[in-house]
Structure formats: C-alpha cells, structure tokens
Amino acid sequence: MSSAGGSRPLWLLLLPTLPREITPGSIRSFYASTLGQVLQKAADTSSSFQTVTILDIAVPCNAGNPLEPFYYSALQNLLGQLYKLIGLLCAEHSIDVQYGNDVDVRVLLFKEAKTEGPLNETVQAVEDDPSIGPFVSLRRLARCGRPWQRVCSTDGDDGEILLQLFLRLRNEAVDDSKGKIVIERFTLEPSYPASTSLETPATDVQVIRDHHNAVAVGGTFDHLHVGHKLLLSMTALVLNYNVQPGVKAERSLIVGITGDKLLENKKFCEHLQGWHQRQAAVQSFLLAFLVVNEPLQNLSSTMDEKKESSLGRIVMNSLPSGIVIEYVEIFDAFGPTITNGSISALVLSAETRAGGKAVNEKRAEKQWTSLDIFEVDVLDSAEAIPATSDLGTQDFRNKLSSTEIRRRLAKKSGTAD
Image (cartoon, helix red, strand yellow):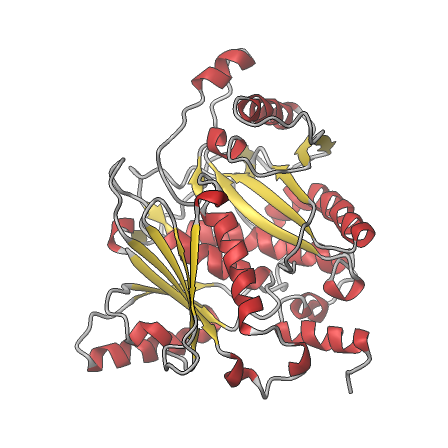
C-alpha cells in the first residue's frame, strides 16, 4: 500500500459488477476471493522484483453523470468498503512494507458500458465522453495509455464480456503487441444480487458539484496507506467537474502537507518520510485517480521552493482541463484554508471534525464564507472481520497507522526500542 517511486510493475483488475447493497458483508462476499488472489500474486511479484507492484482496481460506477445529483455518502461508502477490504486482505496475507512484498492499490471508477448485442456492435456503440475527472467511460479507461503489463478479470459471462470489450477498445489506440500484455481470469462467486449502478440512500444529502471550484484537504500523509487514499479520493470527488465542453474553467484542489519541522517529535521519526517524498506519493496517487482520461505526459509540473518564506514549499500540477493541484507545505492546523478565500469546501476525517469547526471560526473572524465540510469515515475493522477470522482488530488498525508502519520499519532495521 506504499507509493514508493521507481519503475514498478503495473497491473489492472477489472471488476464487472457491484453488490446491489454496499455493506461490509456484501463487499467481502463479492470480492474477497478475487482480490485476495490478485493481491497475493502482486505481492509475490513485489517480492521477486524487490519493488512495489501497482494494482489499479477499476470498479463500475454510474454516479458521475453530470446531469444527475452527486451523492457524497454513497460514493464514500463504496470506496470506504473497498479500501477497508483491501486493508483486511493485506493484513490476512501479510502483505506489508515490513515483508518487502507491499502492493500499491488504487481504486478507479469507470462508467457502465451497455453490452447488448454482438461484441463488434457493442464496441462501436460504447460512448466516449468529454468529461474530466475521476468518472470516465470504459473507452477512456481502455485508451488512456497506461502501460499495464497484466490485466486481471473475473470468470463468468459479465467478467468475460467486460474484458473483451476493454481489450477491443484498447486495441483501437494502444499497441500492446510488443509488451505482451498478460491476461488472467479469477473466480468471482457472489452470493448477493449484483448491480452496476450505485444505490443512493434515500437520506443522503445532495451536493451541487458546480459550487466547489476550490477544495482543500490536509494531513501528514506519511507512508501513504488506504486511509489516506480514501481521504484523497473523496477530496477529488468533491471538486466540480460539471463544465461545458470546451470551456476551461479554473478549479483548484489544494493539499496541505505537514512540514518536516512539525514532525521532529513524532515516534520513530528516523523512519518518517521527508516532505518531498510524502508530496510525491500524494501526487502519484491523485494523478492516477483524477487524470485517467488525460495522458500523464500532458501534465506540467512546476516547483517553487521558498525555504525562508512562511508560505513554505509549493508544488503545482497544471492539468490541460484547467484543474490545478497545489501541494502546500503547512505549519499549523489551518494552512491555506485561512489564507485562500476562494476555497469553499474542506474534506477531513471524522476524527478531525473539531479541526473543521476551528477553521470556520477563523474564517468567520475574517468575515469569510464558512467552508462546506465533508467527512470521511475512519476505516474500522469492527464490522468487516468475520467471526471465523483469526485476524485481530489491532492487526488491521496497524495497517492504517503511519506510526505503526514506522515502528515496524524500525523493528525491521533493528532501531526500535
């Protein structure tokens, strides 16, 4: 679950269906066997090549239609349950930076493709879309040009139809013949009714996406893990993508990353990643999630270091769509939320709810508009671990703790007390 740099194996897992009801039990029933097998194989590859295998997991989700309401909590539940299961499976299979068999998992979202009729007709009928952001058509996912060396799918009719459609669409634009892409199928045996549409709770709160052209999130982001990835994904999802085709509206995603000086007293600080390493991990994940339909070579990255300035270090990604991602070094709990008046939304974990209140109090002192606060649930194993599992709750929670990751690294290197 790390995001270390370097040349690494890149895999894709295509999941054809969702449980009709997104619960810990249904997600585990649907995906545990398949995900467990793929994660184990990817972990073995990481160990063999002494690097971290990247596993992109593409999940069908039609919640990104710009003409429909955006339901935050339904998407947060889906991604939260998936990342929770991934964390549990990594704990169960001893997949970890400590063992040198880590896997960098990234959950991506694609829109359902209608697969009625002969495959050739279906390929022609699959619509492309001009939209930007994390919700992309299957055509855009297939043609994005990412050099996946292995594409994993599920057996059965749904999985095979999706795989063949993906490969046909990919072959329209990408020549995989030299790379000899590996195709592998895994068993999917769900005991719950299936769906490709995301069911929206009747009590959910509708979010008008075009309201949020500047969204912020903050954290230390040390040794990026699944909890961080859920937080960053939901931050990206709150940003406005509902713009007219051809219109280049400016939007900002602002990530505050705690400066090194504030972390000197952290436990096992000798294994704490430096600011640039943490920033690079966040950037790698966000671009992979947010820019599926824009070739990474089209991105421009500029860096502005101001070591003597109170503003600290800033790295910017300027996307052709007009979205700017800013990674800002922060020295307190507020960061740019009280210096940038254009920010209208803040995404935070439920355990830091008080921080959101404090931010809005500071903004009120400036007579600025209060930020809309979006909470991300803390991933907890209480409902996700089956009664028959030997995995303890603490073992899972340790996978979601940067401090615990550093402790394990210290133990591995012999520097732990």
